Length: 437
Image 1: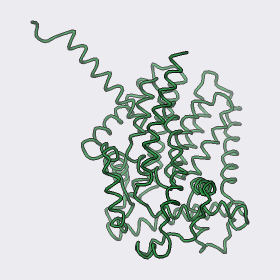
Image 2 (image 1 turned 180 degrees about the horizontal axis):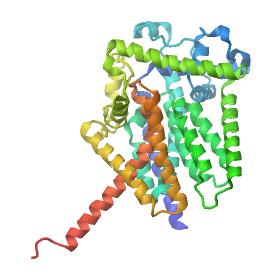
Image 3 (image 1 turned 90 degrees about the vertical axis):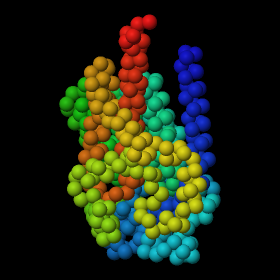
Image 4 (image 1 turned 120 degrees about the horizontal axis):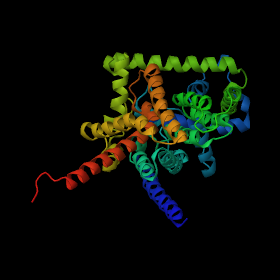
């Protein structure tokens, strides 16, 4: 009991220290114009209580920029930003960022948020970070015990993509938290597995690219992790309940669907598809090599952004000159980039692939629940990669964020097994010296 309490205290202290370091540098993260858009749309919270019908989808208002954003973007981030503003008494911006104009125009128009509003918005989502650390620690522990748990948590806490993209008033912080929450819940629900719909729906409504998590949850329902397998009839009932709950939560979080759910959903799907096509077209006009046309190009692009490329301050270069000074300050801390680049990134990638490959082999020696959990995460990694490769041709670094929790797990497993391998070699060389004295 004393050992358990000591371990809990140590974990709490480490998470606290990591979180303090993470949060203290929130104000110096370079600004991204999408932060202004999210803060602009966070005004939906007040609008909902004033006149919720203004949020409903209307085919006659397809040119309304707010309706377009409701069709395109998941709602949880703007909800969290709205709550953060309410707690601090700040108003939502009334002006959105205009990507067709330069920085100076947007600044004069009031589309660059004040530092107070920007930091408030960032903290509203960045406070999910310590919970994410705790949950991914539990995931690592479920896979391989205490050492792997620590390695998994530290790999997340030191991940350069996490340190940049989740400290902005954008979707990546909620995306990361809800994806980790979903993966953790997979191991927790021994009964009523249809309740997996709750974290899966939250993940989807944090960012649509988390949608593959719903498929992973359905696989877990049909092929349970635990010893007592429910009857097929019960599992199919759980699937039906899962779908019902998932849809219900999505409807509750998206008032724009309430007036005409089917047509509004179709409009959202078409708007998202059209956006990706238009972005790809614009990028291809400037540089055709930026758009990943083929499957091999997309796989290579995912690999580069997940492991090698420097943390991307912006998706495009049309405002990087204005953020150059804050970029210099941000990267003055080596922790923000030291794990990236060809040498360090290749080493991390090799360890990650090693952990991924060895995981199903080691799973054979685990108990049934842990074995199926490892295999489920293993299959989930492939599903997430397959969906992203198929659907996303755009070269934006933050689009690989749904893969980060999986990568942290396999990196920890790879690092742990490398340590065991080196320890075994060292022990063997000491017990069998080549030269006798």
